[in-house]
Amino acid sequence: MSALDWAVLTGALLFIIGYGTWRTRRAGHSLDGYLLGGRQTRWWGVGLSIIATQASAVTFLSTPGQAYADGMRFIQFYFGLPLAMVLIAVVAVPIYHRLRVYTAYEYLQSRFDRRTRTLAASLFLVQRGFSNGLSLYAPALVLSAILGWNTTVTVLLLGTVMIAYTVSGGTRAVTVTQQGQVAVIFAGMATAGYLLVHYLPAEVGFSDALHVAGRLGKLNLVDFHFSWTDRYNFWTGMTGGLFLALSYFGTDQSQVQRYLSGQSVTQSRLGLLMNGLVKVPMQLGILLIGVLLFVFYLFQPAPLSFNRPVYERVMHGPRAADARRLETEHQAIQQAQQEAAAAFVQARHAHDAPAQAAAQQRLQLTQASAAGLRTDWQQLVQQAAPAADVKDTDYVFISFVLRYLPRGLVGLLVAVVLSAALGSAAGGLNSLGSTTLIDLYRPFTRRQDQTEAELVRVSRWATVGWGVLGIGFALFAARMENLIQAVNILGSLFYGTILGIFAVAFFQKHVHGRAVFWAAAATQLATVLCFWLTDIAYLWFNLLGCAAVMLLAELLQRFWPEPAKRVLAPA
Amino acid sequence: MPQPAPAPADAHDDAQPPLLPSWRAWYALVLAALAAEIALMVAFTRYFAA
Image (cartoon, rainbow over the protein chains, first blue to last red):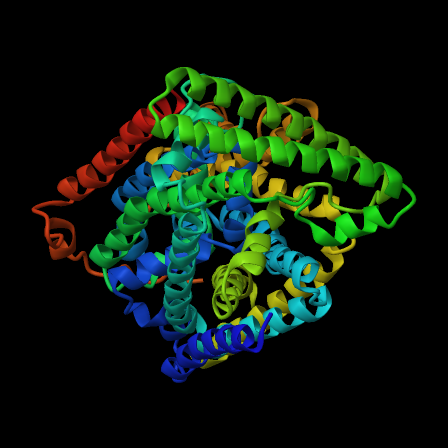
């Protein structure tokens, strides 16, 4: 990166964090002030905070790469989200606001009992505690590979900055910094998209690019074919995606805390609905950048692997001769691909249908050859460097940024990645500190006379603790690639159960604590067993887990009713 | 552990959203936007694949 890039990067990050910390320097010693920003956030602040908490660095590193390799079908994953926003706005928001809770799990005690609340809070803390560490590690890994930054230093630096401003200003600091972070993210991605179209050859317009991508199956936005094992189609999006969004936005404290900080029911609802309106177009834009990258590299030479360090390692390793042979084949395919793509656009402009069909066929053949070559390369990487990551799609977008974007904009785009990492991880960290205080410390401590200032201090220390744990996990994860995947899936396996508990609380008013607690425990065990023993795509576990808790709780309530003295009045 | 005291219900909140006449209208707007986006995406998929 040039000096100008460094100036833009550090300037943007320091300004956002400095301004956020300065604006919230008097976070207050009250629980309301520290944990929920005094419940003063307006709808747009709530909405931006929700967007920033969900959009991690992975969103901007991996999603364009995913579209580059697999087309735009990932968009279907978000189809259930707007519906989930409406359902949460109707059902959950008024209840949370009426009870003036600090965490979603607090509601479970008034509705059921303390152990159900503790179970849900613990499941949340385990999965969020680990995944928060990963949201620091993922960008550090990619930036270290591309820019040569040291992973440990990047993680430590990001983690320390995040802990500092989250601890100092609490939820208000997180919300204010997230607003600046979202502004940088939107500005950076819009600029990258515009320049991508601008860098296409002069004779290739935006419409031509879409036609080329469409003919090669990259604009596969909606697929109505049903399959239990296919992760992204209309049905998984509208069911699995809906239940995942209900779990994440309705019961995950990292999101619930965003809209609990809203000034009123109206402000919280509008913030959620804003997310429902913005999310699908936003993801569409990010995926479109990936598809445009795909078209860009039909006309420009693409590297054999976007992961440069792995490429260099294989090229200079014991299988260098095989690697060079693949490189030669790759260049020949690239040449054929460029000629076929140019011929396709030319035929399109001339309205010559037979020539267009012939060029399309040539393009499809070169794509098939490129796919075969990619498989050979991945096998070679596995043999030559067994510890290396064979997948290079996470590096597609950032490689383009570094190679083709002008000075200054590279710094802006790296700031996008780091802003996303900080915004998302800070939202998670803030919720971990709050849940630890409200759901684990306060109900179990013997010191019932603590002032709010003392409780805020406990929350600050809990936030520091989770932050340090997250950094430690991120550094540990660097040595265990499989662990990352395991943690990502672990979160999804918990969500169905947690959502089931809340669904029973909201909709099955006659079911009491004992029934829902054992239903949740049994469902969690069954979910883990099903994951190990079957091929069901993990997105489905959100729906199946929720349904199982509701059904089991209903049966237990009927056939194993709770003794009258234990039953609490429903909220 | 005593539970937090419930806040008084804010009737104005539920009844009067800004800009649109009711919350139902807001929910319908969000769902209609989703339906329109999906319809547009189906049309795009078919148009550009042909």
